[in-house]
Image (cartoon, rainbow, N blue to C red; front, side, top):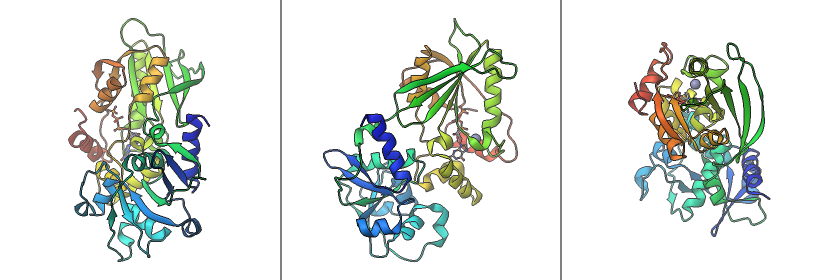
Length: 346
Ligand SMILES: Nc1nc2c(ncn2[C@@H]2O[C@H](COP(=O)(O)OP(=O)(O)OP(=O)(O)O)[C@@H](O)[C@H]2O)c(=O)[nH]1
Ligand SMILES: [Zn+2]
């Protein structure tokens, strides 16, 4: 199997409730808490539960750990009562209020930290909660190299490019790029740009805002305004990156929204689910820009970590151009949280 197909097969296996072996000198065999059924647990003998440090913190387990770094995964012993449903209730904060009064949960020493991190990343790429059953090593199970998962991003291949006339932008072209994990990112190339660095927008997918016009965020208006600004600037590029929910996927984003309905802000909702506040990186964005012959950009964003991420990935940001939309009563707190907690520039 090629590296790419290994990665894509592993993502598909986790989604469909099968086990995956994270290959290294000390392999780790895991399956998703969300998709593994009870029969599989009993017949295959799940030994322990792997959760993220953020979720362990939300469960107040951090004080029982030696190193309470939330970026470090946490392995929990599997007590007798921990069946598939009880594990789901522990790992899904949407069920925090309904957990049976069982416990305590005992952390175990984590001897395969890098493999565990790769395993949790794989769950995120599959759009699942960062929570995995750990089994005795099973050499017959399909495997993916731990290093391939850890450094999965960088390469993209062009699938196709065609004309796509848009309203007021008849000269637009669309190009689709496939990434190592199978995601298909889209570039809209507006007008003919040359000379100074083109105006570029990295837009992270937001199904709710982009398609349904949700008022909870500013993504829909930002998308439309970015295209108009690029056209007015005599051309540039909008990358539509499939990083739904700051990289946690649509299912997990709606879980975060459900937590926000209960009073958590956009940052704390992510942490409670077991994710970092922002799980995106911009390696693939940089690779796409390079494929388009662009090495220097003027970047439309309020988010300094986008500028940093793109520069780290080798694209020069000659200028940051602010991209503010008027607030509405539904997204004012969200925008304030991004300024106050996530470092977005006013
Ligand atoms: N997890 C999570 N993701 C969200 C939430 N609201 C919007 N998103 C996602 O956030 C991403 C958009 O990121 P923003 O933070 O709005 O903007 P940004 O792209 O970081 O910064 P700008 O370039 O200044 O717009 C999209 O992937 C949305 O799906 C939320 O409450 N939780
Ligand atoms: Zn949005």
